[in-house]
Length: 444
Ligand SMILES: [Zn+2]
Image 1: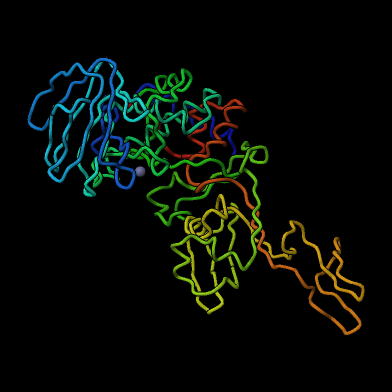
Image 2 (image 1 turned 30 degrees about the horizontal axis):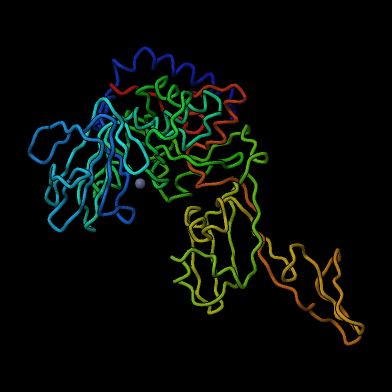
């Protein structure tokens, strides 16, 4: 891909958008408006508890089910879950409000941040009892306010302005997509606050630079065929990204903008985790395989065969164990999941070699008539003594994993966006490189 060509193409597209975005923009999906509020799951499921403390500098406006907001001029509240539902009380125990199971209590204050635990949030806090009998805490706020609490966790705030703007647009698109259809609908919110969706930490790490990137791109999202695009992102990938069809088995026709793309600007060799190596013994390998796959194997792993695509990612592998069982893997996402924390991406090669236990470099122990010697820098691992050819002793067979990049590799490379901005590219050019064929559109 020639970036100069893309630049010319995108400049023309951007010009058209500037003139026509508001007049001709018509979605077939029901798209949130710019000031619509997103529901962010702060604690839910296993991370939820049965007591939640909330603080405010100037009181609370509280709406219990079927009642209007009432102001309470107190500094803190305690919510407790019970078999009947949820109760809200003052620090001294006075009852303020309650809600039955399936109902929500809404807490807000337009003039103050609300603090849950040690973290302060813009917008409203909504509480309800979840299926585990604990309290789900939701933060509801306009999308751009939410993004101010995302960017500091998803980029280095010192990165170039165009990278921060790129990340604001990509994260906004991800959030708007979650508001339309979310895997968290059954949890009672649109998006969670962890790496599962997008990391969000309220106002704790907000900075002027990241807040400006949000306001400079206000309402701007990535669309494809007049629908909100799917915009995954990851840390780094070297020069090539992975396609969504090879990575997750998704339809290449539905997501042509999530193809494997080339970006020669990402200087992966100079970033942490950009180039990585992991050495592990063949005997130990099974213990490091993710538990989901470990349960499907009954012995030690005896063979790994795999195919590496031109972009470097392994999207096809067969693993055989000592009992003869095999696991076949058909996407690079599953390859990454199989090896778990042994690998940082599915863009790697595996070499087999021999390393003496307790040493980090290949070497050889030789037992001669006068004792044991460590012999290094020899070409082979067998030796010949007076009785003939022998395998060397005290030597362990290992796999060396040698890889590039960190993350799933699909969509935007965050480090790639950083290096493109360093090279002088705009956020529009960065987005058109990683999501080719998409448009930028503004929410109404
Ligand atoms: Zn999530």
